[in-house]
Image (cartoon, rainbow, N blue to C red; front, side, top):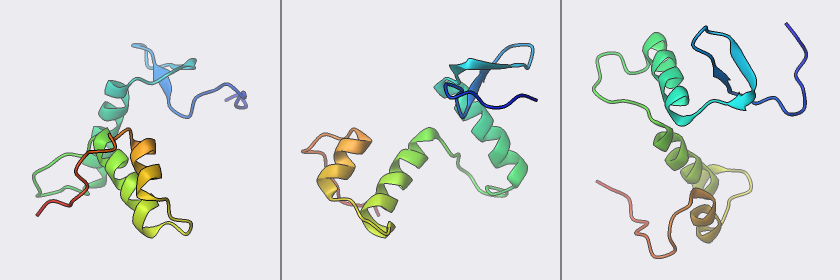
Length: 94
C-alpha cells in the first residue's frame, strides 16, 4: 500500500515471512517457483506433461523478436540479446 519508487523491482524478493523486499530483486529460483504456481493455478498445462521455465521466455522472446514483432530484429541482434554464441545452430527442432 505504497506508491512505487523509481528503484523498485517488478518482481521484488519475498522474505520467508511473506513480505516483499522492495530493494532486492527476486532470484531465478523465486521466479521459477512463482511461475510454477501461476501455471498450476491457470490450468494451462492440465493433463499435459511438461513445465514452463525461464528458458521458455528467453526462447519465446527471441522467436517473437525475429519472426513476429512489428519491428523485427536481425538474427545477429537476437543472438546478442539472447546471449547465444555467433556460431550456435539456429535450425529448429522436429
